[in-house]
Length: 99
Image 1 (cartoon, rainbow, N blue to C red):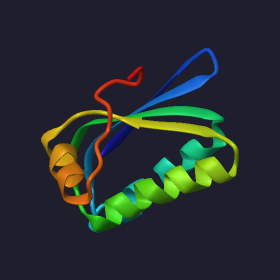
Image 2 (image 1 turned 90 degrees about the vertical axis):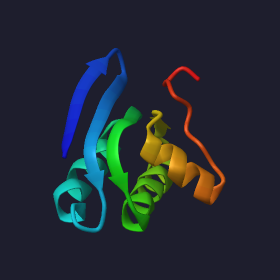
Image 3 (image 1 turned 180 degrees about the vertical axis):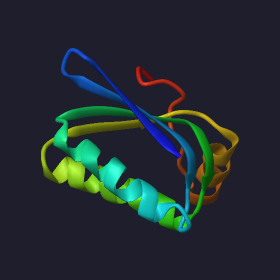
């Protein structure tokens, strides 16, 4: 798992790669929740290789905490894993941050 950060103006660009599952939660939770310190984040999930219910819960928690803090969090990316989960839960992510 890796989380790569870069900054453009006032936006934190974050790219996540690897697994987001119950088995990797202890490795990724602090890094992902650390994004909450930035008022504007764009999180690219296109390199996500696996996602389970725990990983999805973490993404939803991240979104909720960001909204509660008045921050803007934009999840985006297209991958087979996200497409499959999207079909199961009835939602999808845009492929690019601008969409």
